[in-house]
Image (cartoon, helix red, strand yellow):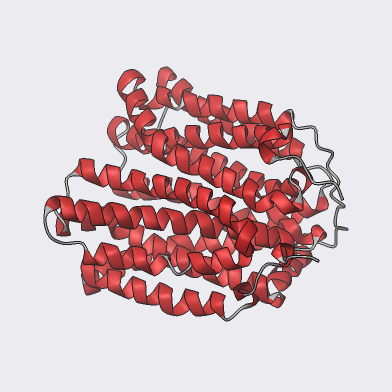
Length: 415
């Protein structure tokens, strides 16, 4: 069988990667500009800020499962993906327009954030099965690593760009870059030429199809372990992030500038993780790479809990922990995507991905609330040790006692 061209020589992959890069960079700008607009220009209350934050993730809980079922019914996914990007561009562009007209309000920001979040959920549901049409099976882990590296690069560069734009043109108009990035992403995705060969699943009622996706995840020991590990990691990760800033500022006494650099180190770790995964997955397979990555998650919490000494020592330890966390997260996420594509039956890919996204992203809200409560009850440093113990005692056995401890089928050498 003919081997596919290297990814960097494949036009469709370059278009997808470019779309991801520009869209993620624009999103990072709005991630800063939207709350700044709400807090500084519109005088949003803490409750309104909470609603604004929730509006971005609420669509996962409302339509995440249904979006996957609809994606499996469709023969073509690309037109829906392009449409989601165009709607997001329009929604974001209304914010500076409303500011100019004197109509912008916090409810307007919440509504537009909800629209963009809804489009994001639908886009992700359709993008997952679409990848199978564009990327050869043997190259999916490498391609997913490339997408993860684009996201990590945006995490590193986006906040700085956002801060510069806010200073130059004010927060509402900085969001025009995000609108432009959605338009560019739509244009790039529309240029993909790979034929879409997805065979639609026969419609049997939306909730019957959703249940089929849920059963497929629960019945498959590999997918079940992946989903359980993802839920556990996100729960403790969200709990950690809820306390990260206050821990760094009040317990460690780090200045705000250092905290910003430590946050950027997550993106640096993500880039390293993408590079490591792309190189090593061919040798050890996606299964073992993912199994090794879960060993790193408790270390991030341990290093953070141990941080003490001089200002620069604490900064160095926190930065090292952030880099390690970025490596672990991107390696886990890359391998998880490749394994899910491999394990999911073609007609169930959308629903299986939606089921896992619903559970893994939906738990973020619970983790954030639990983090605040546990921080109040146990104290900030002790709770980090509790997180380290929790993620180690739950995630490591979950993965290492599953089929994921074995070499990936696709990686097994052939005679």
